[in-house]
Length: 433
Length: 173
Image 1 (cartoon, each protein chain N blue to C red):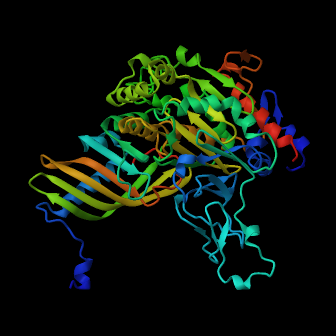
Image 2: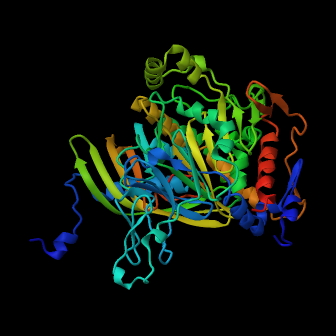
Image 3: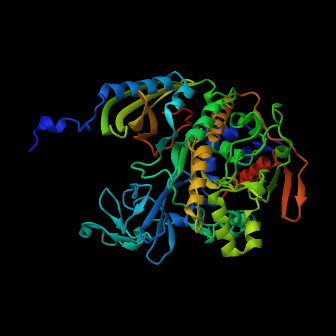
């Protein structure tokens, strides 16, 4: 910080507004890397990305390269992707298979659990050199829920169970749709970048208020969006036909928060009774065979549009995928969007989902491109020193408890979810380790 | 043994149609995109035509891996409706593009069936909102003879950076 210290950070967030420096100040970003991405439970990847022993997947936690591996005993490891000798990044491919991970520089090689197994010319090592002391460093803590692998770069802090507990059922909502009860992240990844702060994307995933105007170019003259789910012939009524006003059904959407910055938005009103296609019908038959009619009906009843597991991953319930938010710099962010394969579903169903995801979330999609433009424009606007504050006050005080869901709810046209994210943000940022 | 000069000759398929005819078709297609005449561009595609930009190198299929674009005529129309919408924010201001198409090779020709496969190098420079960027790759056109002209059965663009992270892309390449 320009004037340093946690007290100053605390001043950047007020009940219905946040200071522009939250998005625009490189010093705030550095502190976020330390106190949020250096501490929080972060989504790393899915266990299906390393299905067999020797498989690896590389990514970043904050800005630090890590490699997720599958060891011979079946365990998944998350290791810092940095040679313990002179520091080179060891594994350079995005994913692959290798019995040993060998550093390109001097040839040190590591087992898939990080154990140092080979040092060329060992006779040159110091007399007290012990290989055990030079294993690839493990990230301090990892946790997994139904294949979703998380890690924390801090040795202490809230437990994985405390972090994920309140939002577990949102993961279930997606995973249960697979007849085999598991997902596979093996359909590739959409990657896009933008010149904007990472939180612009985080805030956006639960923002239903922006859709009627921000995505105006995706609706037809009747105010209806294109189909986004296999089996639908059209999408949601976003605006009223020929009036340009937000549709009543869209306005009726709700948001929910459950602590830790997590939250979700309620389902998109679609005519589920008419949802039908050869692929969807075949999928439904398989699901009914596996889990019975009543359970299948429950699973196929949409409850969620989008879920945020703060701070770096969202799950889209509508056209299913998992989105990972990767901060690169205060004004630069990469997003990775993984389609999920419902294991056990007919190929045609999974391919249908995949094709629709190209249309909504590729770098060349109809939906995401207008969001990216909004993020870029926000980052530019926030260079202005006046006004200093960003308003997030819509619906302040209108929140109400939802006892059935053990959550707090509000209108999805409000900004309760953003305020909840900043409550979590300030919690991380203020706390000195 | 082939001489060096012979080896350097592209292996063109035997074809009754002069390569210049195919080149003129590709140049016109690129011109329509540069002029933002998207509906005329779409009209070049067969009813069962597809426009495909894979997201991985050597991608075998659009059905088991993500693609940057995989549009049939219906999706092409939705895309073009959006490009013409007054509130397409990612085209405010609109992009300007310049395509360069060259190194055209007739890879397959079946005059009896009217089936042709062309490969060519494409470079598209795009300028928008104070930023200029370059797309480059090899494009594969599968054509079907249609009267005196051709319809595109598939246009596939293999970008050299297909698996990189992209800034927002609004226009077909």
